[in-house]
Length: 439
Image (cartoon, rainbow, N blue to C red; front, side, top):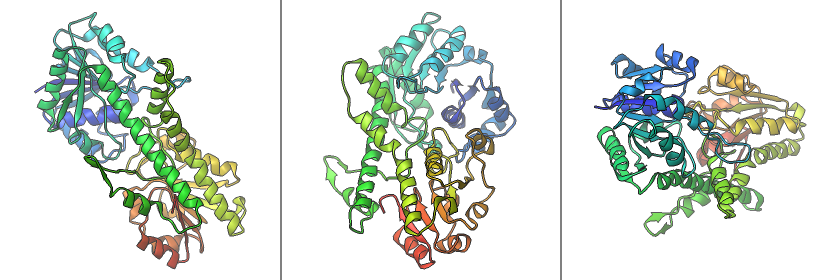
């Protein structure tokens, strides 16, 4: 099987490294973050992703996976995967400094015949103009782009099931990169004509998702505003029964906001690309504006409830159930929960406690947030419980248990739990109030 080095061992790199190691490859995961590498090497898993700790332990135990800060193992690799982050620059373009730095550290170790694949999200032209140009001055390597398509919370399953897209700088590079994935994973591999096409695939995917969620958010806000007993989830379920062409309408679900490392920046990459090409694109700006406004919208809903029941914000204790940006993930990067807390505090809700069993205390502390040790501690005597992620751990809390912990008449705000009608009825029967996004 292949010898592989994965450059960048964060959320995506660690998943890719552990999965392909489980498929029989000999994998070395590299990162400049010595603390992260030390934790992995000593059997710790600082990244909360379902199944990841077990997969890493298995790979290390069987000698197929190791973590290091040393880049020299690249010289022995058949395949090099670059999975470093691509932040949003101040001008809303892609900050290419991490990908340039990774390329510079890879370059001294490459040799003829290696496959080098970029997995980091980059604008069209970066794989060819930045990575390939630098590396092919050192050796005759085969360079391709293959978009990362994994979602936190289900990344391991998705890597082993979703189609993989590959585009190389020449036909030989495309064939070699596609061959690696076909040999390694039991998934469909889609070859496209160039790395630029593959780079656009990733941006198109994330723009579609962001736009779709923006549509759900606008529908939710409209359902809230109209003088009828509308439930946006019922509306969306009905709308999604319509088949158009080969596929059904597929409106996603609204929530308290969009976060994470991809959707909050990739539409801006598209927007800036359009500006630089002389094209004024309207959809990226629209989706980002709509989705970024949801934390403030949810804070307004809580404020309206407090005013209706005659409570001042200073009198309301809020239990924030969740901090991560995504259900069943511990990833707090660009979480919409943080601006929601800020919006609440700006409105005078000073007493906000947070509980998230998936988030590491150090990560929360880095955001300036202290975590309650248990759901019971957070919920006890709270006037309002805001479920802003739908972790499986939270689903075990019954309406009756909520009623026993919260103050009588407390508000249960549903940002992402999507309580069904039976659970909502049980909450109300227990003396609690319920309010969802668009429900």
